Length: 369
Image (cartoon, rainbow, N blue to C red; front, side, top):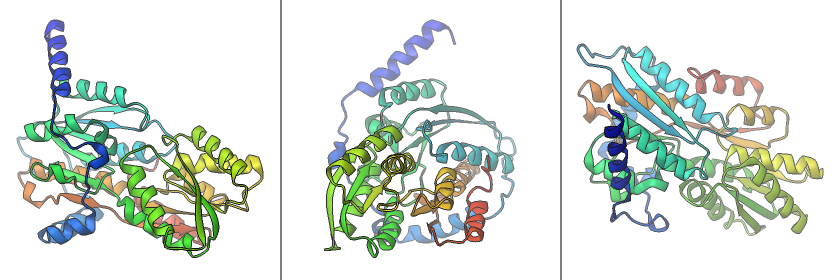
């Protein structure tokens, strides 16, 4: 494409995203929890079950004779200690290859929460490439106006990763798939385990204002409020940054030296909490959780630094995306559920190494880096 045409294309895309919209403001954005979604759409349960079985099974070659290569753009907040996003890309591409799907892939990475402008620029660049499929994460909700316009337009087809709660205002024109792991369910597993053991003061370190913090952090706060022996004394937003989590933990312990539990909303936050507690010599006093069960968390759990975590069967969410594209290319879009919510398991310091190894083998079967 000539340079002048490329510039005009970019400008038109930028203007496209700056146009006013009726999108609901984020603070009022309503999500439909998985359990509520199934109650409202009972026909989806059978679709979800059969699709989940497809994800767990070995790949079966797609029937795509004569179909050209699919263009796929991925925009992920992958610049962080958590290996979730890097593994996601590896598992996704491996499954596509095993399905014998021809594809071209462009990948854009950024830091979670803080790189909103960069993500907007990456979105413009990705759309200029004219992909058939656009895969975005929960960070897409920072750019919901743009995503809403893409959904209304129908091109490219959108897959949202790491979000399993459909957005009410998008129900008439949903993404091809919401794929990920239920943040609320994972947090409830952690809460049931830890709230029976903890008492006294606790603090909470959120991700950034928005979806992840609401689904993980606020879910824990609601559960903790049912325990009269627990009192929340502090909370901080950390942008999912290890350094900010370390600094927040130091402030918490300085102001509230008797804190017994610090709930973490993400891997990098957990690692920052552990950094601070080790520096202060408070490792034995404070219960610390992980969220996700990536390699760094598993190592910390084995070393008895982390008390517990929930582990996602990591690769399944990415395999689900590949299978959704396969069904769409085959003309079987009606077999794709709106939501794929992968399996989550609770791990504690008492979980045997054999169990952890078995879960690890399943979770990272395509993305063993």
